[in-house]
Length: 67
Image (cartoon, rainbow, N blue to C red; front, side):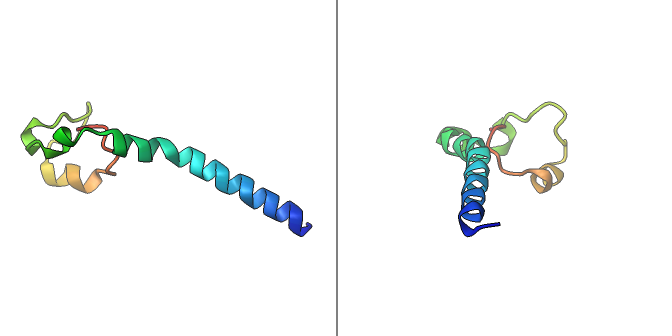
């Protein structure tokens, strides 16, 4: 494999990784600040969410879509 081909594949792979991760970053940035500042009992949770607050927070990945 030539250096040029390797660099091209590395650049394409990096671009695909960045493009795939954009929705997660944008969802976090577009979450209204009021939703993040609400008390825990006012936050909307997705269907099937864990009932226990500690278990929910432990399983949360921080996408910002629930609140």
